[in-house]
Image (cartoon, rainbow, N blue to C red; front, side, top):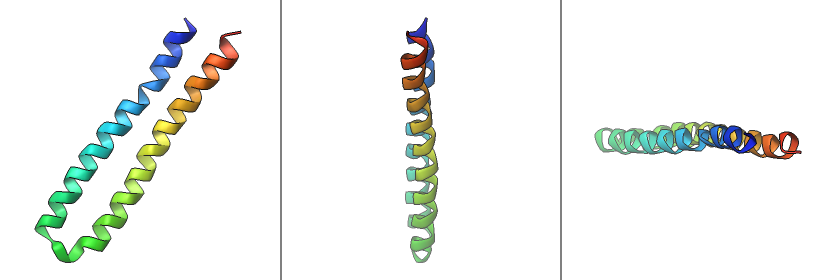
Amino acid sequence: MVALGAGIAALSCIGAGLGLGIATSKACEACARQPEADGKIMRLLLLGGALAEATAIYGFVIGILIILFMGA
């Protein structure tokens, strides 16, 4: 039962991966359409990527905590 909860918590990594992939593709499209806005697009892409990765890290930490404290 504990492994099921940890597995569900780890599913947040899938969402983060999909989010980063979509954001990167949209940033590439935006740079192709407006090359002069390159710096601003990159800055927003990095900020969004950091937020998406934070979500994945939170899910990973929750999965580890479930295994450590509920498994005993």
